[in-house]
Length: 467
Image (cartoon, rainbow, N blue to C red; front, side, top):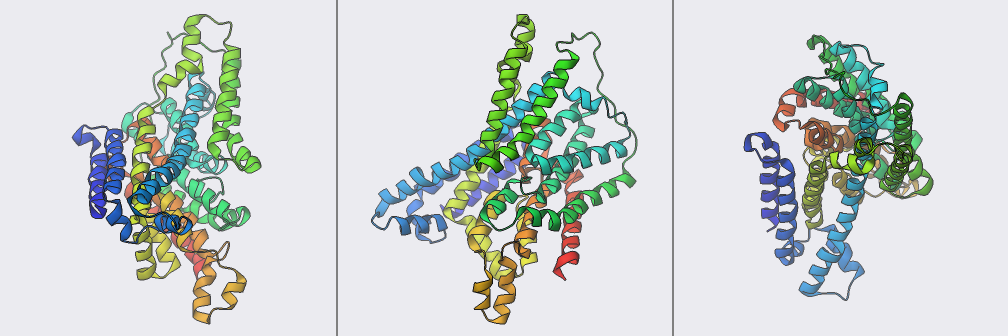
């Protein structure tokens, strides 16, 4: 069963990658493997857990020494592991639902039109640089997932051709992941490292911003020599009835952007999960909509009220997240990811190579459990513990102190490595769902650019600090 879980995951992942040739929506494939991995896990739980690869099971038995047998195994999987992982997954899903709804509300009120009207250029290269830098710094302030949702909504107002929009949306994913890597609130993994004490906010900004910028700029420089022509703007139907006034467009744009910016502030002040701040922002913009449209005719209310706008939210993308993260959670709980992390440490034993490998793996497997596994494998070293080690061991252990090279570089690689495949990051999955980007198309057109950017940024970090 232990090996069969991997087989099911690989087949399911292949079905997701071949979504268009198979004509089966990726959400369906993700839900199937998300469920089957847990089914196989619990059916073969006794044999799987006795292999000794699951750190979670070891922790459970240590804290519950009086519980034994099949009953204990079922209690561990059903009452502890599923509930624990569902809680973590739900945080992402509710965050995503809240962000997508807020963006949809602003879009429905034509708030983004105020911004797109300011972007006059149709030159592909100029537009690429403008949107990439906008995305890079927005993702550091908000986070890469929210920023991608916002910028993809803008792209629909700027570019008519589907494949051109796919290309720009894919480059937005690269920029969003690069922008999120150097900010303590820009990516789930950097948030985890920040909260866990592996990094501090000021240090990660100073040490990782330049490599992250390089990871974004190098692909853009390459494209500046190869990309030609202009984009075609979507045709505006002048016969459409304008349901919102200019003041309402400005109001909902401001309330929407402030609501998104409020989320990292909410988290910093309250220490509560970011999804709660997102849901609070959604609630506020919902109330604003109810008040503003309270006296309007029913035909306008039916288009602009949040209840109606919720029907436009892309639920299949949310279900895809649920399925794929559930499958990865099963592999993490059973110990597959722990085996992978141990293998990297034993065979590479070099912090830069380990982090580079984790970054590449994060394009295949979600970077959150990979970083969580790394945090579990490597304790934060202190000056006192290093002083007691022999010189060769101490030199290696020094990379694992707070703000050590391992943690800084891990923030970069785990954040930007996911761009190599569209499925490798929350931003990529969101763009894939919103624009229906084809997995194979992304591999052909974008993956090589992402690899060049990833290695360029990594090389920059090594030249700056590794030597």
